[in-house]
Length: 310
Image (cartoon, rainbow, N blue to C red):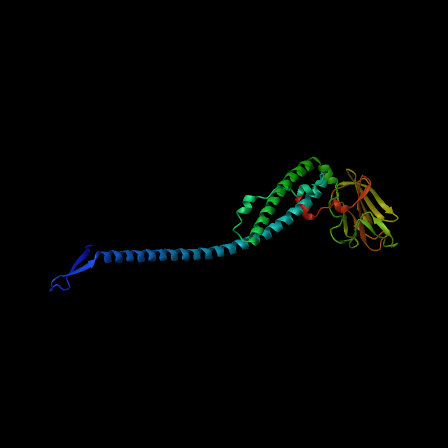
């Protein structure tokens, strides 16, 4: 088989005759193919290195972003816990507000506002995260959904309360909702206790406030004074009828500022703290009756913050 060549003509010097260079075509084609392979491999290597470099930078960025997201998840968890406490406080306030409005309490099972079944699509979308972060986000999602449902329930309850209270203003005015004294502390609560004089177990029908002698005593609701005078055990006493079955009593007082038949408003000063009757020290014995039965005064009492919101 006849071999074929490429002939190259070149001039080594302008004063010299041209020279010929014969190169086998097979060699030229072989070198060209080798060069193409080298260029191809080099190009692939450069692109591969670029991809690796880009992936490294991307992973570094994602690690930093993931750290920031984890920090935000922790912050959201903390904020969610505060929101849960606030929702629980709102339910406590609504419990008293519904009582004042004459409405039934929201059942605990209803307050949980349960729903059925997990969101599988949502869980699947979190599968790329580490277990700890995924569990936190799933918990946040579940708790947030519950809080949103509870907020809706509370909103509906507030409207029910407001609607009812707007129709029952007299009942609100008649309910003993404030402390009878501004200062002092509760020295004896409603319920069973040891009698300070006999040492025997007895039932305490009111609340005792330990407070300085002469401190002002306030009417805890609107009403009419139905009795002022002395009882052997309670000393000087004031009794106020508030209507709707509510009656309040203030015992062991030192000075009385109201008289029988006088109308009073919630917050009016009616007497001063004393030690009259059967008492070991100056204090106020405070009772609340509803339809003739003694009730725990704290059931109806609201805090200053709740009264302001109410």
